[in-house]
Length: 158
Image (cartoon, rainbow, N blue to C red; front, top):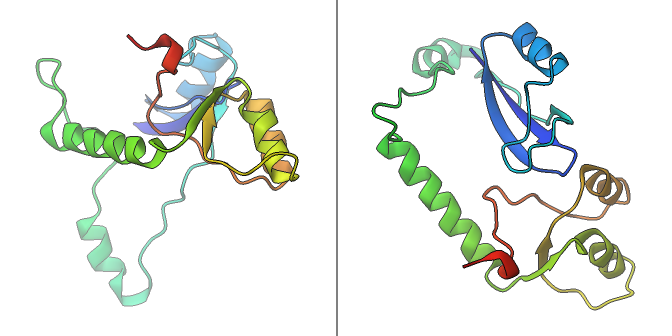
């Protein structure tokens, strides 16, 4: 099994498991890989952290402590408690981080640029941006970061 971090053209990031890299390629060519958030089939591999081994004399110890990339089994459709706890902690940390931030929706790229170039007062914002908009912001040196847990826009919340 191999896991890839993927991103769609709407800048949604998600993780997908495949039997092999050729299986990933084949499924993409057949149009079977799509974003779980918006359904876009325009997806590509997102940057991933490399697996870096321990140095020198620690190599043997590191190998014996390293787990494989096999996912924990999901019995009866329930997530293992460790994963559930980690996801809950991540969601809480993100909520705490953006609690003083303003939702700007589709205006995210525009407002980020205006703040970067001094055309607007700096403020904490979050919103939506397409992959192309995100690439443009990064190319201009504008510091942004993806939200790891999807956020429900205020006008769409119950």
